[in-house]
Length: 250
Image 1 (tube, rainbow, N blue to C red):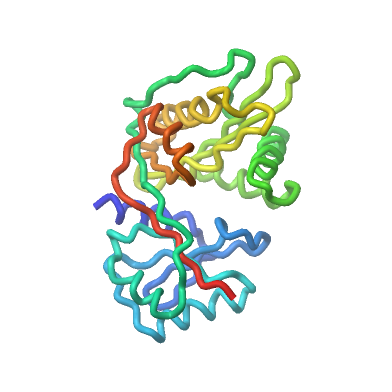
Image 2: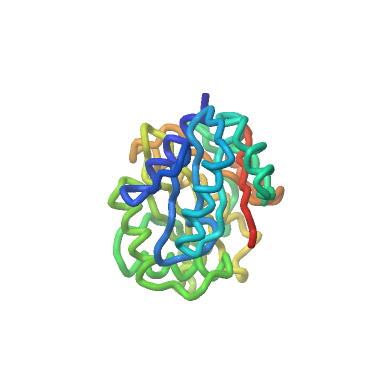
């Protein structure tokens, strides 16, 4: 089941600092309290008790983080009911899309931009600035750059989009560090000034194709809205399931 593969990847991405509470693996970012960096993944086929859910909530509260999960409900169908009973509410249900690297489709892109892979710290700083601005996050700092460096060190990929007329970085994207061939294509970001020029699709296509050389045979992503889903569909991504984001707000 692909959902189990995604869960295995997410647990791997949680890293050595991951915590366990009952049938949950918890990923917490000590420097960033933003929701996308703090979540839990249930064990496959988990059937958590009320006490186990309470322990999960406590683990987040102890670190001043919002208790929340990101997971594939098809792989753990009993978890959502237990969370809803504990007061959790659904943030969103998002299509889970995949595209084998050899099936990616190139789409038209503004000819005044160049897309390139990034490996230097200077390039990672530029990427971090674009990503944070695009997602309305605080100004990029050394922890954002360190996070991108860990992705590279783990075999992931970071890309930047350069406006060739100004030399400014105007877009970016990344994959996660692959685990058994699976990795997420994420953080596709484009500055407001350069949107609707085909850049998001072009970055996604490049990351997907380049991922094959990095050992990523099953790239996946979860678009935040229908507009993003259409962009990814144009470059070859298709729906294979659903991801659930669910949290307990104070």
